[in-house]
Length: 463
Image (cartoon, rainbow, N blue to C red; front, side, top):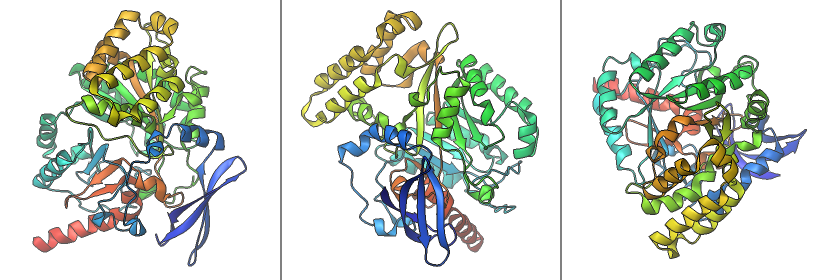
């Protein structure tokens, strides 16, 4: 079906691979001369694979530069500055310390409690480095370990607050303490609810992050979506992440993880069709609008140019009656993005006002007005559209943003389904103490242990 490049899951050597359709799935098939053949699921459904490709608006522009040193990819990320995609989310590991022993942790290997913990000054330098990127990442994420294990975390949070920190990621897997006990080692449900209560008290918005473990909590997808809808005043989104077979989970008994299409099918089933599988789109659908919006933004956003196989997403509106409605039910996505794509392709020849009017009319002509008037209201939506076109930002939605939350799934790669074409377009990047940018899946599958051990060795040598 298609040729690509992968790695041997045993020795990490780069090897050729093929994507093949077999028994209703797309498989990645590869062979290492030393360790033999490997077969893994790349994508569950050829239909949704092709559906997602239709909305890969980044690839259609053909205006990116293929890495000149791609022969060294992914082994030499530390010396490569030719990655295709810019950083959308910058990730900083602030500690390896943790008060849990999660069996699904992708950043820790076995009982290895390596003391990787950048100093405060190093974190400041990483923040300055990410802030200097052009375009600047719209999101930064502190990770670990458990960041709150650091004694100076309040000071670090203060640094981020100065730079616009406005949201908290809260790990939220289940409504069952038996799940937390099994996977996280502790009963945590009350802690989760208390955290949400405190965030509401101080008006701190939340994104719930869920680890999906096949056979354990996939039956709770619908109830978590309902929970987010009922608390959309404070919950800005839910990101479901199928278990990644790296770190402690490398040898997890469930080798065949869920991928995005399994997730999408369960969403449709568990919401009783209110959100259909085909209501979830690849993040690269946002490339064309962002290309146009860059003309009106003081600080241009990077293009959301990840591979369509990296995740699916939509925004869900909660009506005054409590009904959940994907925003593509209000807007004919096919028509809207066709118009936007056409406008974006002529962006160099169009003036600011011409682009603004094209974007405005593309929005107006694509709307399903009967549903808009019934669920949102004509004047409410028109006011939001005008604000979004004049000053594009989440805040421009006004009070509507308290009725909208993000629903997405992000399926990370492991050493078995590793695909170099996805890695090159990754938009979630780790930033290291030596100010290097490394794609998420390359970092966790190839580079993490070496970077952490080298950091410790250097630290001990200096000491």
